[in-house]
Image 1 (cartoon, rainbow, N blue to C red):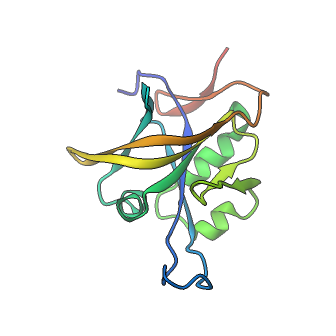
Image 2 (image 1 turned 135 degrees about the vertical axis):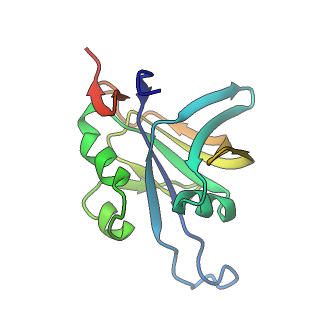
Length: 163
C-alpha cells in the first residue's frame, strides 16, 4: 500500500469538559493526529471517512466526542504532519503551541491556519475493520482558507510534493 499516493490531513478534536453540565468547567485538551487514510464517501449527504488505529487516543476520543475537524495540509505544512505523526509524543498542548489555528464553531476543534481546506464533522457511523476503526462523518462546515500552494502527499513512506 506504500505505492498508493494519498493526501495528508490533520484530524483534530477537543476532549469534552470533565463536567459537561457545568458551563464554567474548563474545556478539554485539544488532540490531533496525522492521517493519510481519509476520503470523501458521499456528496449527498456530504460524508467523509477516516481510518483510525483501534485503541488509539483519537479512536477513543471520537468514540465519546461526536464532533471533530479535518485540515487538509498544504505542501508547506510538512512539519505539522510530522509533528502529529510522532509516536510516544509529548503533550498535545505543546504540539499545538506554535501552530496558527482557529477554533471551529461547529466542533470546537482546531482548524489549522493555511490549510488548503477545512471540514467540521459529526460522526454518523463507526465500523470496526481489522485493527482499525472506520469513522464516517457528516460534513457540517467546509471552507477553503488558503488557495496558496499544492497538496501535501504521502508516497513510499515519505511526505512529498506534487510536480
